[in-house]
Image 1 (cartoon, rainbow, N blue to C red):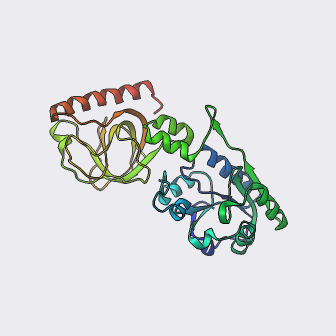
Image 2: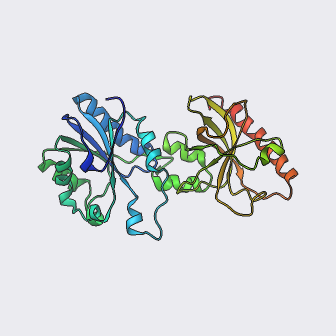
Image 3: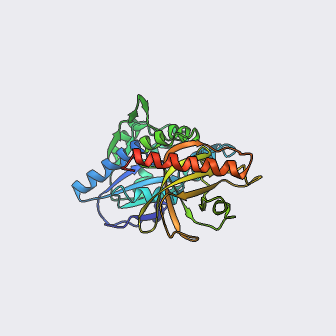
Length: 316
């Protein structure tokens, strides 16, 4: 199968009658630890002539159990599907994490899966994965219930980086601190934003640094500041740039954060173009300046620093 099949819920998962190898998890961020779980499912499916897929959830369980303080997600479902589509999978099932789903007892979870996916062959999870009402189910329980149902279970060990476990929460902390380089090391790819270029106030043009303005409202907001970035177009042509993400305190009194990208090379990109912006290096925090001239001088410095970054990192 070539195109990634997408199903909203297990009850809608109409799949061919081939053995299914299913990786299960929230998989927020799809970091290297998540990728190791998914890679095991893909590898086994290819060896056996089966199909490899992911069962993931939306919204995050915290939205149900802590609605006043839910965990801010690293990526919305559409962005998650885009990354999943690059991992060799055949299908993805996005299960609504509803009150009814949360009430499924751990012991009933595998039979519930089999009712909806009778061709299920094997389940793949991380070694610390929990499931069932009250999160009482662990991998040992999953193995017992799956074995009784004639299924195999593969659990991937947690990966470490620089002596600490790779986790979505650790990546959230790094991004909130502006350490996009550290976050990218754990993700295994560049953290990215997506959006459509919109017309702005053209203030950048007036000071010699025109920008592509991209409204972008992630749940987890990275640290406001200036970053060296790579911009990808629909044609996948990479363009080097410097971006500011924040509320623009020098020129705005209030408002939603905005991602503004100044390209370091010529381009015909304009309003209405959909872009992907890969974040590569944090350059400085967002600041308020006393005048537009101070801002212009700082942007000139930011541009030089971004060019220096790309010169020192030619593979970027």
